[in-house]
Length: 360
Image (cartoon, rainbow, N blue to C red; front, side, top):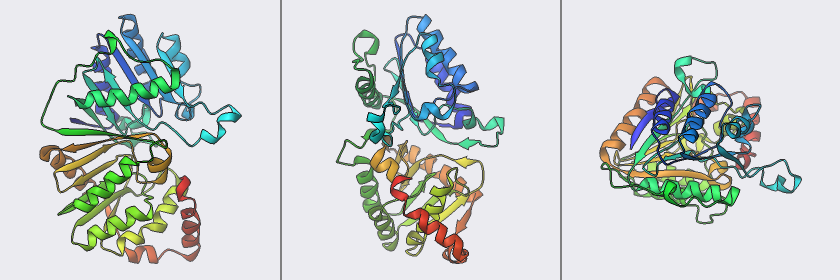
């Protein structure tokens, strides 16, 4: 399990793995923009197709519309079999518009995989210093977890296209690798068990010393707020790291309206300056970590198809905890006094936005 910072490290590693593929490449993502990064990845996938590699690309139908024209046309022109997850243009599918595939998975030759929070778009490359630059964290995965990641991706592909990814090209080669014990958590609106939400609650319940959370959107339901507060009240150090300025104003207003519920019970909330940080991490007791695509909000925990990986390894957890500590060091702490000092109209605005939290 190797952490990759931003698009600066992730995209070269991903493209290098695809260029080395000999049998198959399967990729699933929420956003796949038709920009410099997106077109470069199309070229890499096209080269794989020309070598005889089986390539499948699944892009969420809403996510593909973040750029125009859609990336699907150049993918298909390059010979890549590509599809959109749950198309929304048909009036009959309008009720499904909020059920988006937010997972980010790429599996190469059934041996190596990539997952985490990064979409495919220019703004994740911080070296370009774009105004909308977005920091994030992705992971290179080997070992048995690759088979679990592929199973989730293959199921999404079968649901969308009817094709079963089977045969020699899709044979898995996920021998044991490294020291991390990992388990994949796939979640979605069809799964009433809510595995990611219950994993968050369980982690908070068993924490003994510390909990560190980094998320771009913090709109937990009352159960999660209670679990955070209860952990803090029994002496656990709870640190929550958020972007100082979000990329969705209404979501940030609603987030601000509920922060007092965690602060009043001793949780510490920190905000960090630009670039906007899209990282999703949870580290408990420097021994256990949760990585992946899910945010702390209703859209991720109730509506979207999400994927997280829980990891048991002290070395990895300590490294990820250090990354969160670095975010805390470069940010500032939010206080109840600061929240109480907001003008009345701002409080009313934030409170009104909070009413829409289940849909943000």
